[in-house]
Amino acid sequence: MKNLDFSEAMLQLKKGNCIARNGWNGNGMHCFAQFPDEHSKMTHSYLVMVIPGCEEGERMLPWQPAQVDLFATDWEIV
Image 1 (tube, rainbow, N blue to C red):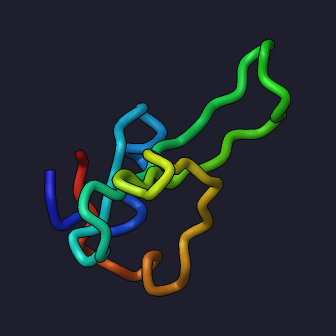
Image 2: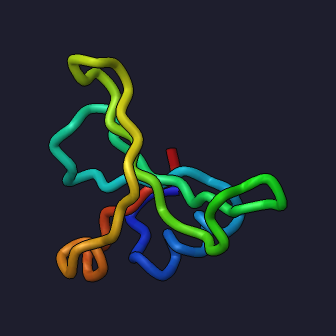
């Protein structure tokens, strides 16, 4: 699925899918939702950005969408 708005993309995250924006600069960058379980140190769900191809390999970090991401309509499932 392509050309999703953020609300549609968020529904896909909740289903366990990875999403990305067509307008992002990094090749292969994407996000997924992390849902804590009884073994997690975190107690609430959060978003993770994956940045492949970094000098030290693949990077994963907590991610919060910017306003431009919230209003974009170029989200897609990856």
